[in-house]
Length: 163
Ligand code: DLZ
Image (spheres, rainbow, N blue to C red):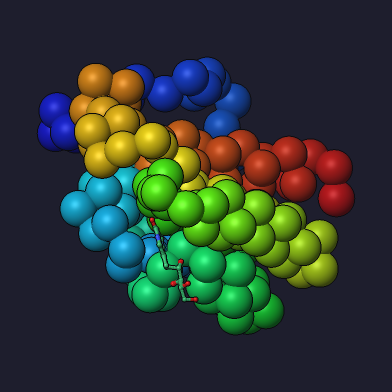
């Protein structure tokens, strides 16, 4: 694991499920690509570190975070996908555009999860500025992509216990 992927996660890594047969999709927004690529790297490395097979990880790009819900739905509707990790970065601007996008994505991803009965993870940063975003994309506050991947793993473990 490179220093860029140092695990500063808030999660315990005990009792994680076996994910070697699990299939993941990562949906990545192209807006603020420097940030979303770093988040993707963090999420991908965390899946690999915890036993995912690289051949079981798909990736799809969407133009902006607003499109994450649709991308997530298309992946989640596939029988061969167990969990979808959505990655975006919506930086606060001079208008309320960011609020509309953030609320729409949060609601949209919740809807996709409930509709498909699969973990759909909100790996979207909502910072005030680019520096805050970089601090959370492999910088001094860790990498929220790692946490998004850990959330997916943990939810699959919970689903296995319950269903
Ligand atoms: C339009 C827009 C703006 C202003 N800001 C962002 C942003 O910070 N992060 C992001 O992921 N996407 C942004 N977008 C694009 C929207 O998510 C969406 O792609 C467009 O409104 C088209 O539906």
